[in-house]
Length: 477
Image 1 (tube, one colour):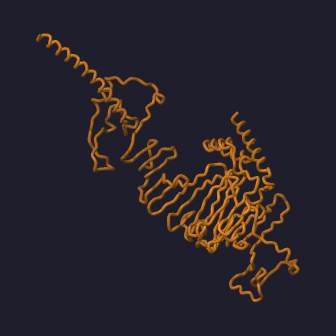
Image 2 (cartoon, helix red, strand yellow):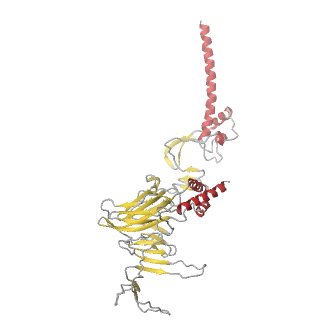
Image 3 (tube, helix red, strand yellow):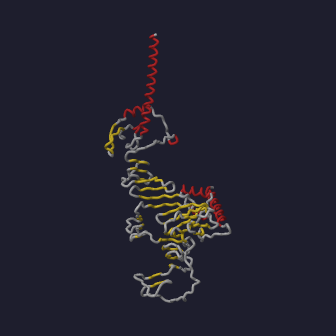
């Protein structure tokens, strides 16, 4: 029944998403190959007008720029996301990304929460296939420039577009067709701006004009053959556009890889052993990240697949290695100081946790002293126990007689003397199976039973003493 309900929710949510996505709003329809929004740029602001029919509950607009500038704003559906310059702004290239957060039924969110708890990845595929979740991120990206406090119009690099300009209206010389191999003994210049006497230096091929593209057009006609077309792109083609090098999957209208101009040296470096360096040409491990101040990896669950937004940072510097909860006040729930000892914290395959030991013997094994600033509670509920029987006074008295209190110091801490018992010497009643440890509650229970018996004896002696005193008073009268 639960499986059937899950499928029905998927189908219902998919039908509602389809109905919403195919409804015209303000007379405009939207197809999945178009960008998310139309961009309007003024002198000090950029506004993105979302297309109708988008099944989103809100948009997140992120803008990055010079001098580590970052802006992240959230806009509810029905509002046009915008970015506005504050002050004059720093001159330079800015990048933006518009992310659509899908609108989901409450039932779908419940299913997602269930899948997260159970680790049921198949549910995600069911929801996607039913149309309840987007098949891919709803995202659009682009660039603009700021010059002298003003925003300049930039070319789009969004899904479904490219910056190419057609020249079909121009008068061009007739094409030349060579029906044989072409061998050039020398260098070649290709483009509208090549000139006679071009200086090649050591370059074998030069592309020279104001629109630089190399298109790979795979004409395979058989269905089983790969046929995706690709393009190498250098820079936007519009006024105020970005300077970059990119690889585009033309068939699927996606920009796969981009490198912005003036990126640091060795931003991405792969050596002859497959090791990847980020801002280093000498990687020593498979992924080596170098930074002058707190190298950081950001794990950004951005909400694009229905899950809640959550951002974690994993970083380290000379003060500590840490995990930062960037979503909730940038708290640091986990930190390690440089120079921490071996096996400070270990987790074994069976789930046992060791502090100061690689071989924990219990679920939590602390090698050394423990300080608890708060209460310590031991599970003792009747629900967890069986074969409950009263400890007799004779058993308790016998165990107490055989306990030998001693004073000693641990080999790991020779400066502090403590008192206690030797595990191998205690009587069977309070011994553990390993004979290497003691359970304080065993000693407490034994002492409690002895004290209870002593209290009974004291109460009886007091009763007798009171009787004797009362008799003596009667005799005196």
